[in-house]
Length: 104
Image (cartoon, rainbow, N blue to C red; front, top):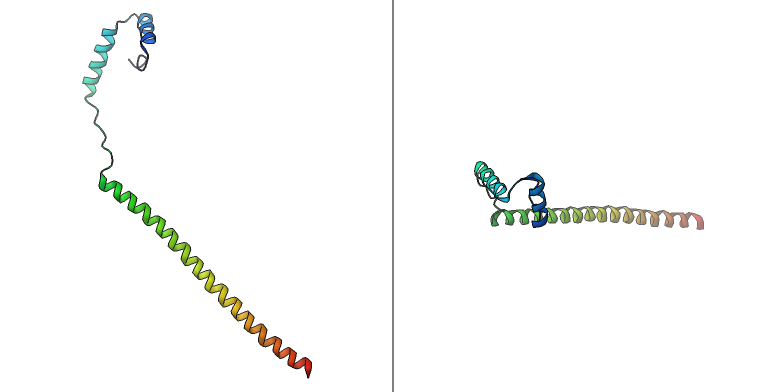
């Protein structure tokens, strides 16, 4: 049965002749196998609520990443401002003192 599955009419006819079978036998076997296995349970798709939850979780992860990036940029800006403001004022005071000493 598995070998005959998916064959077109010509290929199926050649297969049945080669195996010495009739199409009726193949149909009977297939029906018996399906009856023995029972009907396959249909796997339901995700419910609308589950899809909404998945979409909301995806949006939450995206916003968390954006928030983390913004926080990192703010910390970097604060650090850079503090570093360069301190160095610039310190440099101005030291150079003013150096100029006074040089002129004296």
